Structure formats: structure tokens, C-alpha cells
Amino acid sequence: MTRVAGARSISLLALLTAAVVGAGAADRVAGLSASQQATFSTRVEAVRVDVLVTDRGRPVRGLAAGDFEILDNGVPQQVEFASFEQIPLNVVMVLDMSASVVGERLTNLRAAGRAVLQGLKPADQAGLITFNEPVMLQSRLTTDVGPVRQALDVATADGRTSLIDAVYTGMMLGESDAGRSLVVVFSDGLDTSSWLSARLVLETARRTDVVVYSVWVGGQERLAFLRDLSQYTGGTLVEAASTKNLDAIFLSVLDEFRQRYLLSYSPRGVAAAGWHQLEVRVRRRNVTIKARPGYVVGPTG
Image (tube, rainbow, N blue to C red; front, top):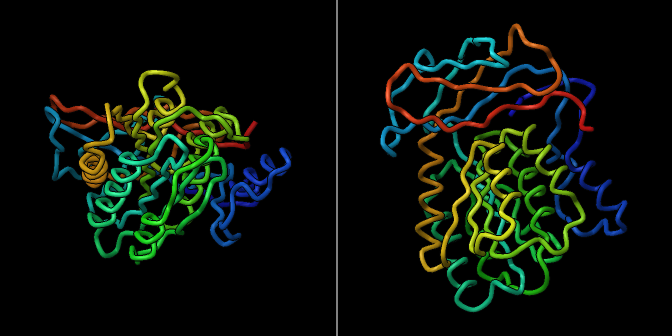
């Protein structure tokens, strides 16, 4: 959510490593170098807000900064920047490869991942994380989708499900480079083996710029984590009956994300630390607005 600088920074990779090492399994998340660590601090320079504006379900185009109003803890802010499709995307796919994703489900999941890669523009970047019990960084963010596609094609399904750990890693990867970061999470099962807590990951979601769209094929049981994750980041939870149309679902997520506006403002008249409730308005009637409900500044508890 915030682009920040300063000495009192928190490394997401350090937090993750500390939590995992404390559990005696430092190698469960591998492959992110120190150069890719996302950092946060208590001095906010600018706040970025990804906003989707629709009219009867169709994206509204052509809006400028002056068409938006943002209230930060009830205080009106000056919107300094509003972009639409100009900034390249960082698309991180976080895909469940546990034992329940076999046969036709794995085939459909691979096809959906390939559809996303085919839908990217030349300047967009893609990254791939797969998870069962370990979380595997299959590809860092890159504009060369060939290796990403190859890693997707050879990924196999087996073992238990570390959904929460994988989501954390996906957000960290999304924050590791400039651009607009979309994390697409797919799972068809309950978390059975994560070390990190849902509370920690949701707290991180309130501090990052990434937008998470979750695709769930697993019935109605225990959807609270993915629902909260998507809500906190301004994304959407998509509940699918099966994986038969998974490629269309993934492409609709990518298309909707491209229709979003990226707003920026420098906070004024509000306290530096703590929870900041956001309200985004558009000077136009009969539109629906989707954005994250707020952001947090300050050290994690």
C-alpha cells in the first residue's frame, strides 16, 4: 500500500525466515535473494491505491486524477496521479500443487497459467510460485515468459498444502520490483502444513501494494483467509465449481486488473503511524468502486 523509505525498515524476507527458522525448517521457502527483499518503514512518502471503477459491471475508462476523491482517516487528500494501463504489470501466480491437484485438475491449472502468460504485454513481468508442503520459487519476475512456462509445464502435484506460507511468499515476490503487482492465488484445499499464521500474513497484506485475486475450487469450507486476503488488498475471491473453465477465470482476473486505476497521494493532516482507513470516491453517479479498505504504517506487532 505504501511506498516508504527510512532507517526503521522491516524486511519481509527476514520476517519470513525468522518465523520459519524458529520452526526448524529454514529451507521451506527458497530462492529469494537479499536484492529482492521488500522493505517498509514508518515514514510514508506516498500512498498508492489500486482502484476498480465499474458501471453496471463494466469498467469505466477515461477518468483523471481530478475525478477521484480520497479520504484518509476522514481527511480529504490531494490525488496527485491517476494512471490507467500505462504501468507494466508484475503478475505472480501462486499455484496449489498438492496431492488433490492431479489428473484433469493439473491439466486445467497448467492451461490457465499458460493463458495468463500469453495475455501479458511485452513490458509485463511474470513470476511463478508453486506449493504443496514446501513452497517453491519456480521463477522470479521476468519479461521472458519462456522459462516460466517451462517451469509450469513440469510442475507436479503431490503432498500436503502450505497455502498461507505460499501467499506470503507471493506477496513478497510481487513487492520485489517496480510496477503494479497482481498476485493470483489458486487452491482447491485447506491449509494443512504452513508454519506462518494467517494473522501474520493478513497483517502483511495490509502493508503492501500488491492486489491479490484468489481462485478457490474447494466448496464453502473455511474460506475466511482467502476472503480476508482479497478484501484487505482490494482484490476479489472467485469461487469456482470446478477447474473446467479455469483458463477463462484467470484471463478475466488479468483483464479486470488491467482496467484498474493507480492513484497516488502524499498523506497530509493524518497521524503518521497506525491504521489508516481509506474511502475512495468518484465524481460520477451510479458507479461501483473497489479498493482496499485501508493501510497500516508502523512496526508489526
